[in-house]
Image (cartoon, rainbow, N blue to C red; front, side):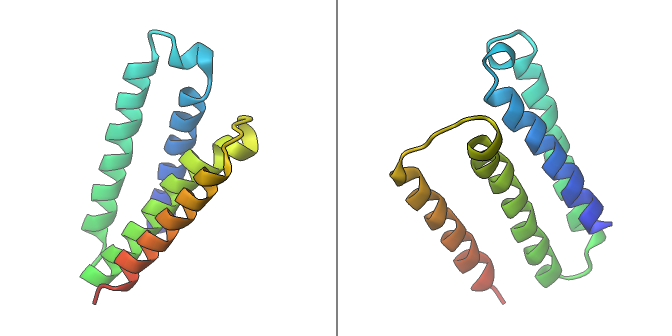
Length: 109
C-alpha cells in the first residue's frame, strides 16, 4: 500500500513538473488550480501514508521515499524529459539536497 501511495505521489509530481515546465500550461489560467490540486493531493497521500505506518522509524523511511520521489519529479525529470539544461552549480546543489536528506533521515533513531 505504501508503494502505491508513493507511486501516486510520483504521478502527481510528474503532472506538476510537466505543468511547471510547459509554457502554455504555466502561463494559462488552469496552472494555479492544477498546482493547488497537486499540492493538496500529495499532502493528503503523505498523511495517509503516515496513518498507515505503525512506527516512527517506518514513517521516517516513508518520508525519505516521499522526498526522493518529489526530488526525482522536480529536479531529474525536467533535465531528462523537458529540455532543461541547468548549469554545473545545479548539479552540486542537487547532490547537497540528496546528502542532506540522507543525513537528516539517516541520523534519526
